[in-house]
Length: 118
Image (cartoon, rainbow, N blue to C red):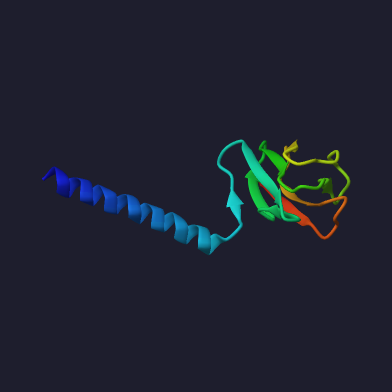
């Protein structure tokens, strides 16, 4: 009896893992933050995720995982990080809803955006 219960529990765990994987594949790189903080990685000359949705008041933390420096620069000129070396971080708190596009000041082909929902 206990063995069959453990088997059903294990199948349920696998089902949840499969559902989470399917949602990740369906939604791709769009991330909705439920906590105050969210992260954007800088990997292989790209911001990951390229588009991030957070709530008003959220802090977004950018972390450089590349071996060369990168800058996070707001298209509208409201913020600019210092040169971020490997494992350096830069954070911004968004207090108004809207879409905020940014790019790397050293590699302008690297682009991303933060969508701040009310």
